Image (tube, rainbow over the protein chains, first blue to last red):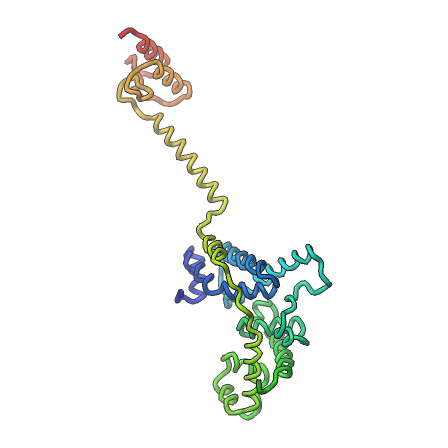
Length: 168
Length: 154
């Protein structure tokens, strides 16, 4: 495990240190693959998105600046690539109308928990509860004001509190 | 702090981001603690199954820094061609150990006459090592002299 911080790795990557790229991969590849699966809905597509995401990071290495958290940088890249794959798959096999920017319907218990939340609320909840991002990082990744994130999360938490039995 | 915390503050407690006074409140407030526990329960229930990344995918990604882009491959090819041309030029520019032995074969024959004629025609600057007539210059007469020597009875 590379002991350097993400900011130090970003600087090293910019300076041509290949080990920094490997360290970023070791640190984030599982999260990227999981996030890609969330948006693409298919494992094979998620693995393709994983490759494309790190290829993008490598191409950007010379001007790569980490202004926020690494996940904040990666999130929109993964989301964009995964949704593009999903839309391409839809064009090949048309499905009933749905918002192309929304994540595919989650399965089972997750679906039950998120039912009733808007797509924007679901996205914020998943970024907060699954990806472990703080509110500012969510705002940065989604490119929306912090107040918008707070509002979406607050209303989502109200709904979730009502859905969860107190003594589970 | 006796008032209940709002939901965002309770979520911050869950995430370990809340200040100490809010954490202390949750410790002594059953209602707020129960809400934090509900949120923790949601986190556990939302946890996705990990995507197993095959070793082949990892190898492909980690080989990116070692794969040279197209422009580098073209540059390498151009450099190889230049090196080859330089090697030929250096070989042509060598001076023979035997006067008139243009092709470095160790003897003077008709091939040397032909080689010298080619060099003269190409405009290559030749030093007096190729001056087999001894007139202080390298020209067609040296070619003819080489030809004459190569067919002379020894």
